[in-house]
Length: 226
Ligand SMILES: *Cc1c(COP(=O)(O)O)cnc(C)c1O
View 1 (cartoon, rainbow, N blue to C red):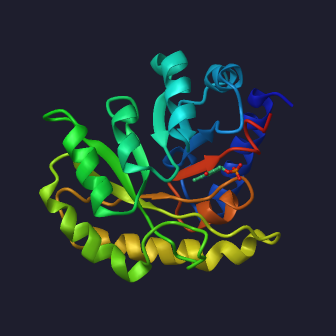
View 2: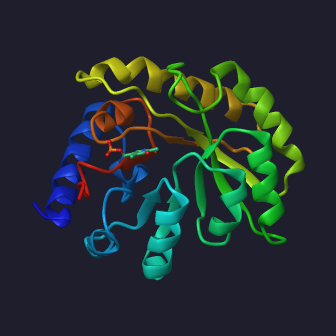
């Protein structure tokens, strides 16, 4: 199947899920995760009508951006080393993996006056050791500390669920992330509207949508692996 065909079938799936839980499919953005594929395949994804492109490593991120930046909106979704931040500043509009103050500080420092980075604070809801992100109870104190950084805008929270054969098992994790998001939203911090939820990948996006995802990050099911 071509990327276009896969996109059409995923869009149908999204519609079915949205009907079930009475959500508007237009409230869900698909981030095409291109980390396993070439620039050529990424271009096909853009030509198929995808706009949001996600990369998790700085090298690939810069390479894809340089080749194709005019046609996409760029999301950095992987863990970010502080010393590499400058390479994506001014290129990547979204950062899904804000997980420490030193990273916020570096992003803020590298941005130009008046520029902002749309950030998701990454939360390790499942507590798996292999996953990065803040523990749930650390999220609010962390976000409060971001008030001094003019360029950091916390648009939402992001998580990665563990892989389960039965995607249903991810539901409590997504539900918890939404609860934490709602508690941040309730603080009404001007720099942290926190209205968005970046959650759901190829195997568990349906459950994530049912639990309120607004950005789903799809790699293998959408653009494949090469
Ligand atoms: C690779 C990756 C994805 C996409 O994974 P698939 O299971 O291939 O859809 C989503 N989010 C992050 C952070 C990733 O690293």
